[in-house]
Structure formats: C-alpha cells, structure tokens
Image 1 (tube, rainbow, N blue to C red):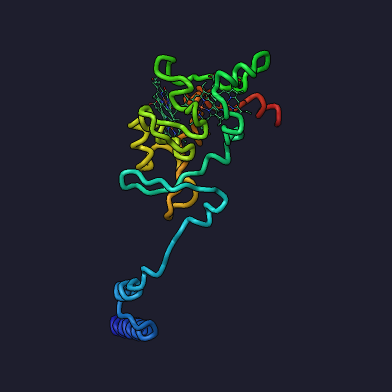
Image 2: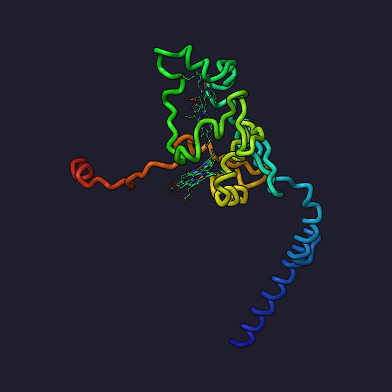
Length: 209
Ligand code: HEC
Ligand code: HEC
Ligand code: HEC
Ligand code: HEC
C-alpha cells in the first residue's frame, strides 16, 4: 500500500515538474512576476482615454490651481445668446421701447441672494451683455461662469475643483470632463426644490394581481 502511494506521489511530482518546465519553455519566463515585469517595460505605449465618450459634448479647458480638466461649453446652449443681438442700446432705452409689452425676460426672477447682495448687474454687464463680470468688474466669459460662483461659494468651488462636488461625465480615464455649476444650478434660482422620495404604491400593486 505505502509503496504504491509513494510511487503515485513521485509520478505526480514528475508530471508536475515536466508540465511546469514545458510551460516556462513556452513563455520564456520563469515566474509570473518575471513575466509581468518584462512585459510591463513597454507599458507607456498603452494609452487609455475617455475621449470617445466625450465626442458628443463641446468642451472648454479649465485650469485652476493645478487641476486641469474639461467642462461643457455653455454659449451654444443659451437660447438668447448673443445678448448683443438686442442689447445694442442701454437698458433704459430698451425698457422705454418695450413699454406696453411683456418684459423681455419676464420669466427670470432672482431667488438667490437678497436684493442688497445681488441684482442683475452683479453678474451681467450692461455695456457688454455678452460677458459676465466679477465683483471687481473683471470680465468673465459665459463658458467660465464657475468663476462667478466661486467668488461667494469658495467651499463648493474647492470641492468641485477636486472632483467631490458635482458630477464627472464620460469615463474614468483622462481627460476628466466635469459638469460646471450652471449645468446643475440655475444661476437665478440655484437651490433645488425639496422632493418627497418615491414611495412604493401597494394599492396599484394589489389591483394588478
Ligand atoms: C430678443 C432680445 C433680447 C435678447 C436676445 C436678450 N435681451 Fe436682455 N433685454 C431685452 C430687453 C428688450 C430688455 C429691457 C427690459 C424689458 O423688456 O423690460 C432687456 C433687459 C435685460 C436686463 C435688465 C433687466 C432689468 O430688469 O433691469 C438684463 C440683465 C438682460 N436683459 C440680460 C440679458 C442677457 C445676459 C442676455 C443674453 C444671454 C440677453 N439679455 C439677451 C432684450 C433681449
Ligand atoms: C449670480 C449671478 C447672476 C445674476 C444675479 C443674474 N444672472 Fe442672468 N445669468 C447668469 C449666468 C451665469 C448665466 C448663464 C447660465 C448658463 O450658462 O446657462 C445667466 C444667463 C442669463 C440669461 C440667458 C439665459 C436665459 O435664461 O434666457 C438671461 C436672459 C439673463 N441671465 C438675465 C438676467 C436678468 C434679467 C437678471 C436679473 C433679474 C439676471 N440675469 C441675474 C448669472 C446671473
Ligand atoms: C455675490 C455673491 C454670490 C454669487 C456671485 C453667487 N452666489 Fe450663490 N448665493 C449667495 C448667497 C448670499 C446665497 C444665500 C445663502 C443662504 O441663503 O444661506 C446663495 C445661495 C446659493 C445656493 C443655495 C444654497 C442653499 O441654501 O441651498 C446655491 C446652490 C448657489 N447660491 C449657487 C450659486 C451658483 C451656481 C452661482 C454662480 C452661477 C452663485 N451661487 C453665485 C451668494 C452668491
Ligand atoms: C452635478 C451637479 C452639480 C454641480 C456641477 C454643482 N453642484 Fe452644487 N449642488 C448640487 C447638489 C445636488 C447639491 C445639494 C442640494 C441640496 O442638498 O438640496 C448642491 C449644493 C450646492 C450648494 C449648497 C450647499 C449647502 O450647504 O446647502 C451650493 C452653494 C452649491 N451647490 C454651489 C455650487 C457651485 C459654486 C458649483 C460649481 C463650482 C456647483 N455647486 C456645482 C449639484 C451640483
């Protein structure tokens, strides 16, 4: 019995040895580690990119404190842009011409900060409506309107730069593409409405049966 077992064991060991030798002959490498190390020498040649997922979105480059990423372009998404199609004259003049008619932007009411903090002119530039401006009157491009928000919402801006606030679009591989503030927040009414969670309707479920 025991000799049989010994013979069996020896046979198995020889077989395994033969197999493993054949294996390493075939693939040149002695161990898996050797193989990984050798074959990863050319790893730089492999590039992974999310670009194909982003093809349908026009993007703008953002570079803020060492963070570089893309955000969706906005101007082509704003129906009333270019503003200067109408805003060739001072607002007072436009208002006079408009007397008796519905105000041009009747649907825009600020539900953001109080009137002592903010009115239309805090963000929009009456002598060049095609641009926004900072609190110190530096022009801000409509595509980069996050620069406007960041003046007063530093914490969210920091989180957003780092990728914690907001949403990343496309894939996990670079280049990073993130939604910008106005993709989610209406600048005129930025808070979200409260919503009830969806509830399971047991009555409907019983009637179906
Ligand atoms: C179709 C014409 C038209 C376009 C396009 C247009 N506006 Fe106006 N806008 C007006 C008129 C007219 C007024 C005068 C206000 C009124 O109608 O009572 C006005 C007024 C305003 C005012 C002052 C509102 C107030 O109550 O003092 C702001 C700010 C403004 N527009 C911003 C913009 C911006 C920003 C754009 C582009 C994104 C734009 N407008 C595009 C016609 C236009
Ligand atoms: C907190 C800054 C801020 C204030 C205050 C503000 N806007 Fe805007 N507004 C913006 C930004 C940013 C956009 C561009 C949003 C986008 O990219 O879609 C915009 C877009 C617009 C547009 C074009 C989009 C549309 O909905 O037609 C009009 C018109 C406009 N604003 C008018 C006004 C008027 C009138 C007021 C005052 C009653 C006002 N805004 C106050 C920041 C502001
Ligand atoms: C001039 C300063 C200023 C600018 C510029 C500004 N905000 Fe605000 N924002 C405020 C203030 C003040 C409040 C009110 C805070 C409160 O009620 O607690 C507010 C409120 C908000 C809220 C609601 C917070 C809540 O209580 O739920 C959001 C979201 C927001 N802002 C987003 C934006 C975005 C997006 C932009 C850029 C388009 C922007 N803000 C530009 C000052 C600003
Ligand atoms: C992908 C969508 C998205 C983007 C992009 C985004 N936010 Fe928000 N933001 C949210 C949501 C969701 C909340 C939570 C709202 C709530 O709790 O009611 C929020 C909350 C906020 C609040 C209120 C925070 C509080 O404590 O109540 C502010 C202010 C704000 N965002 C500003 C910004 C600014 C500034 C940017 C751009 C730098 C930005 N957000 C980009 C979705 C977004």
